[in-house]
Length: 226
Image (tube, rainbow, N blue to C red; front, top):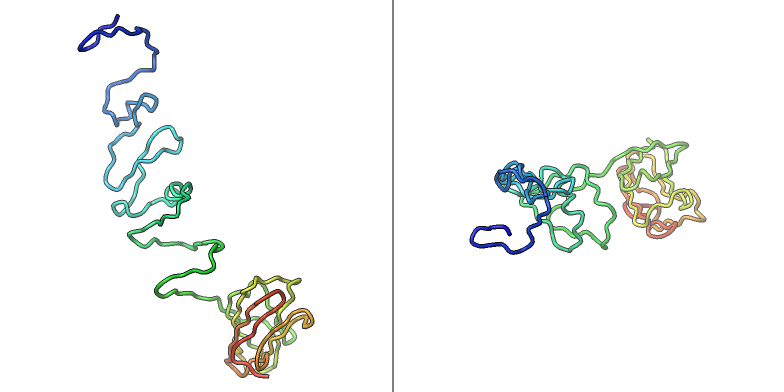
């Protein structure tokens, strides 16, 4: 029978050996994970939070900046958010800086925001071959400066079989030269271009937008003439 402080223990005297617990503070590394210790070497400081370590066998301090306003390591934030499926909002006390972000395909019908949305488009001057240029996939969303000098030229739209632009594709064009530019189809019998009063840019510096509205169907709108 084993004596205990304050009385007598009358239970089973057998004890299963768990290991050696050496003296030390509760948060010290001298008390291992298997024996109830944290394995931490310090209590931590302001701007740190406790998290499960990478080997999932103890705790670690995760450093934060600005008094806990943002993570210094994006992978730490991603790890904490990856398992969240709720509909709550993530609130930042300071605006985060995003380097070349890709938000992926939107799941809603629109993106609503307040204030000014600043967007910069790519501008290119296509090369006319035999006085014509056919738009390509890389022109999607661009501003095309159509300069065929003083010679008339054609901006051509290919069929979906050649390249299937997504419905809603918008390409803006400007007639930079004095040679009048006509917007047409590579295969008129297949591709429909709706416009009024005509499909020709009116004069130098006239502009227009071509928008794909359905399969093999485009809308041309802007400073046009017949």
